Length: 401
Image (cartoon, rainbow, N blue to C red; front, side, top):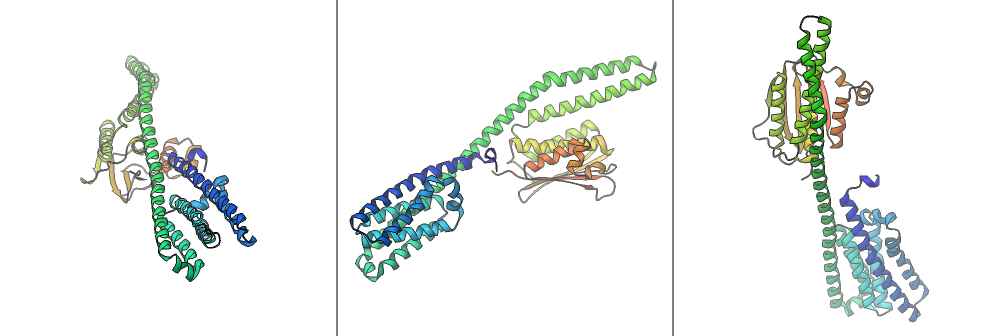
């Protein structure tokens, strides 16, 4: 995955966790260094001193190689298990051999915070259980009897610290989600404003020019009359092409201006279909449940669904030679389904794949499939089940709230 494809929430969450983990990794290395100094002053046997050295990579890797070990720390099984064993053994070493429970407790405390920040609650509790078992079994019966109440209180507060650290990790993740939502809202707002700018530019330039060509073609057709049938037919063809371009420009302008805030997508699409039927003269039938309300989608998602439906209706108008159109809309399992069924001459080129369509110049349906793929949707085109005609089915998941 390229860097630009990573969501802002993921970047913020990863950066926050990385800086926090680095802080506690430094603190653990400091505790290990202090433990090493005490061990050296006590002339600790070599095998136990080596264990201190082996514990250092658990923190050093977090500090200097986070980009390589982050996935193992956040998602793997090995790191929390090994870290729990190391923390328990170091606690035993500090209490039993060095008589420095403060250092062992500090390492356990810092480790509990690290695990709480990076892992889910079951892993936090699992780490706590493994560490406690190592401390109790490794300490022996004498250690448990001598420090029984102290040990229970100590482990209790360590566990409470781990739970609080887990809540801290949840706050990091919540901050990431809120950041992503804020970024998405700003993107939608910017996209809406950009569409309004484009609509104004189109209205002041292309739309006016096309409308002027239409008026000139109409005047030319009327002035020719019956004097030159061949020339008049060319003028008629020019007028029809300009008239079609003018209608398409108005449709694009309407879509650009109306795509900002949609209170109910189902109602909005019904109005779009109704306006299309009135303009083209097609007999349009709606099949939309009365209780259907799709109020969540806004911004870019709704805009693309609207444009896909417009393209499907435009294909019916241009190629199907249909007299009637049946539009069915439903929402099930967090997916919106819109079916456009006509009684025309059949699918023809619409049945081919996107690559073939692009190579042959059929960019409309290729663009439809590309729009839907962006949001995890799909387009299905088949022969109508009622006989002649085409059935185009658009299925697109609802966006997350």
